Image (cartoon, rainbow, N blue to C red; front, top):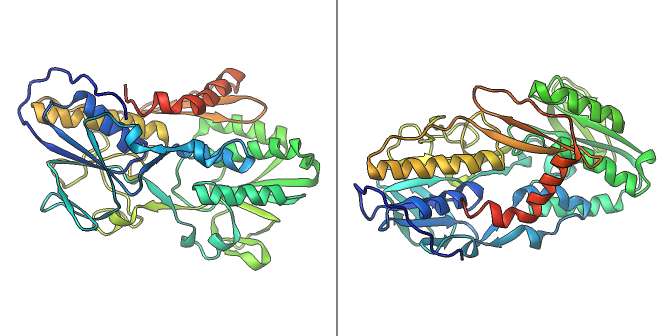
Amino acid sequence: MLPRPHTFGLEVSKMGAHIVIVGGGVGGLVTANRLALLAPGETQITLVNATRMHTYQQGWLYVPFGEEDKKRLQKPLKRLVYERVAVVPQPVVAIDFDHCEVRLDGQSLRYDFLVIATGCEPNPTEITGLAEGAHHFHSAEAALRLRNALSEFEGGRIVVGVAGLPYKCPPSPIEFVCLLHEHLVRRGLRQKTELLYATPLPRVFHLEPLVPLFEERFERFGIRLVPFFTLEAFEPDKKKAISMDGTELTADLFVLVPPHCGAECLKKLGIGDAKGFLPVDRYTLKVQGQERVYALGDCTNLTTPKALTAAYRQAFVVAENIVAELTGKELRRYNGQVGCVIELGDGEATVASFDYDNPPHPPKPNPTLFRQKRALRRLYWQVIPPAL
């Protein structure tokens, strides 16, 4: 547990409010700790999560290559929150907006303010045959299965790509294929392996300023791009992916990021879109049509990427806006800011930093940014959870 923080002197207009935060990922954890730093002293803060653990999810990218281990990527939530944050390790059964209640198994929590930060989940079953025939790295179990598959791979064709939208951390499959190239070089298998990258987009990535950098890296590494490949079905027994236009790809190994969906408890609310993502005001991060309910991170329908840095920045805005409501002050506006450091192999990385109004201006990939990203892997637990 983090030490009890200093609570700053604020003009309090509503004492003893109970703030319930659902979800113990980056968004929920940082919101809880930021509130612990800022909220009036008698405010109660409760963090509800389905498990007792917080996961550094970006680390799953490195597990298939043996560069990370599950044990290093998870820590108990109670060790990561400030003293005034109560952690309730139970799955949410339902949320009742009318009665301001979060229902758990056998109990309910009443709230004055609610923050929903339930993230999103890989949903390979959305596409016929995908779960049975292809790998991905967006969960602990999937990343470990992929590590085993790569350890047994001795050459042939590997197709990496995007099976459906949306998904968390948009550059992650491009990072993966670049890291895979290096992994195969180390194992002496690169000359025996054909690497393809399949995407439903007309080009390698949706943000135009990054496209030349990614294309140069694909050309350097001999990775063939397959654009306009919108996966419709997968035939596991034939190791075949079939696009909506009838194009077929066969391979010895498929690594396809599945489409993601909102958490199960959100789908039951009936206020989200077809995939369970919540509609929020893009500036205040309030859930549309609800009073004193906020949502942030991967569970929302925001157009910002579903990424760690987005959830982190949104958590600061949500916490400060709740304190503003408690103290009768003006709400802060989220400007859509996101910043992603992207590994591109050869010990180099670039960065994409942008917001609602300003596109990214990524620098040429360089070793300095690579070292910064690798440093975050080591320092994540000291830098992100404290919400300073």
